[in-house]
View 1 (spheres, rainbow, N blue to C red):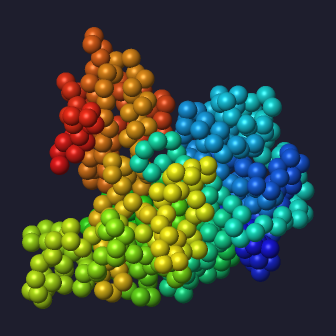
View 2 (cartoon, helix red, strand yellow):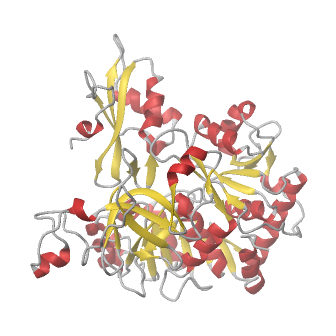
View 3 (tube, helix red, strand yellow):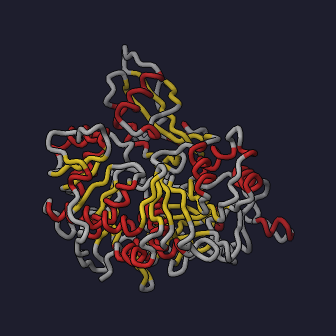
Length: 536
């Protein structure tokens, strides 16, 4: 049997009385967690869920997400994680495309599921929290849905799909990413090896990265549970609350996106805080500003290690290992079992630089060349697309044959995945990413796809034309800006545009800046020249 949940079963056998999940003063032991996982799996089976059926989890970071995730796997189902910031129009596609029959939702989010039930295949709505009201006439509270704990785990094959998160790329509707049991198992095991000495049973991890996101799911939740460690989830990000939790519980590990570390160092009482229990900190989702990294390390005597990954790669492919050294500005070396190349448009390998990082200022030479005076290097000459291969690379996109054709290149007996990111590497095996997918906006670790925001704004009666781009932001890395052409006699303010987006999209997607223009710069074929809007 290769069912991913068996790794939790093994931890439960070895650490039955150890803390598995700590939440708001209550600790759930591994024995208790395994029983709850079995009870939820039993409830799914009673509801008619069969191997391969999809189960949506529309929850923030709560113990019920942990139970729902592994309970779905134990029943042989496939987890469809859903962003709890999404509104009805955003979850409709996820539910329709995946064919999810059961959805577990926070009670406050249940109305959004109800709004789209007729357009989707959802038959069973299970709710978490609330004041006794399950959120819909036929909804069932989580505790009532669960059955008996002694459920026999359903056998699955290594290449059976375990999880189907959604990602958009740069355009179009979100695509379901088919991650198998082996994809997730291998990457969770690799993630366990990242800290010096690995994640141990006596480690406790801050669970602030959202569990619907593959980073929080694999690198934090699953790495902790597979090692027999303790996972401490937080439903939402609050720097003060996170620091309180680290101090109170003596947490030993923290993973986050750059904006989180920036918030921590900018707390008024940061210099008075004691986060000395942290033995390892990881950052991903975007490049962390060097000054933020240095300030955090100076304040708390803790080292931040940068890494890289994608939803399609389960996610981690590169990391700055504590045992092998760190190179600031690099995404690190490949993880064991993962291969990577930098290739040109013809899929020919691009030669590495002697040593990175490349100095993008001045003459543009590499750092090593600048020190030795051995010459200059044009960044364009050393960069190419980053492609990766390994046991963690997805099976493919759900029902998207054309997207799968574009995503992979078979060469030399290896199936290479195109990340769409531009970078370079050095002779020591460190990799560097210098640009992201065209037009995609990365704000505080979240991907925002301009087309989605644009299509919504086109529905506004006062909007005649619109383009959305990412602009630099000190805290978030990038933020969303909308350039709006008003319709004739159209009356709408910047606040009106922002509120319209807030009413229909997740909060992080709304344009924090709005500019009204007479017309958008376009090519002769009608394409918006977004580089002009970004001031490039």
